[in-house]
Image (cartoon, rainbow, N blue to C red):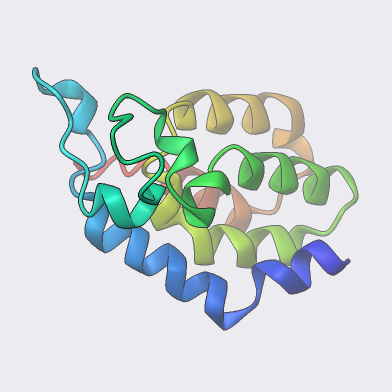
Length: 133
């Protein structure tokens, strides 16, 4: 499980925290106007800083994890690694707030695996939606 060891690294978790802090409000897409990126030149580099319409996924390594984390969670649940899936969801749920398909992610996992999931993992999956808002 070298993938899990990479996700557990402190350096990657610090990058994810920095991404969440500097990114701004996760629901920025609800507001009209252009989304202003924080430190665009630093995120994209000098050669790409003029391309202000690149998708968010190209900004940095933390953003590149957005489409990958749900796939890893799916596979962990498929392979009965519920504790690892729950731990990764605990670590990366602040990042998943920026995932545009998080409702679909939660719906699909619960639809496919609901009868086989422990209650603690179901609650953790539902917390990805951040319903308290």
